[in-house]
Image (cartoon, rainbow, N blue to C red; front, side, top):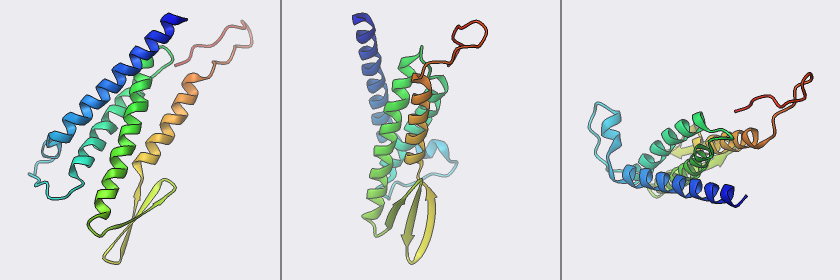
Length: 156
């Protein structure tokens, strides 16, 4: 029991360290120039937050692909990257509002108002947090037993 707790704690610490390292590296690197064939000047205050959100979204996709009951490191990576993505996403929206843009949060959407124009955008942070909670629920529940043998069926 003590070994499992120490292993779980070490996996959590490794996941936090990986997430923090990727967030710091993405904050200081100009990944928008790698993702586009056009050179971008970082004149908007939300660019560093956007970089972290993109990097955390990619990490979340990878971690959620491999997350399972046996692979707790990927579960922790999925959770920490989802939380960091949400933090970066909402700080990006806050930086956007400093330039005169009005943002209203709706369930799974953002309503952006600028110059009397309204744009609805998918709130990727809410979507990722919801999917993370659903996946953690399915990973943590016990698998059902089969009718014939009484043994548990294999799960993720």
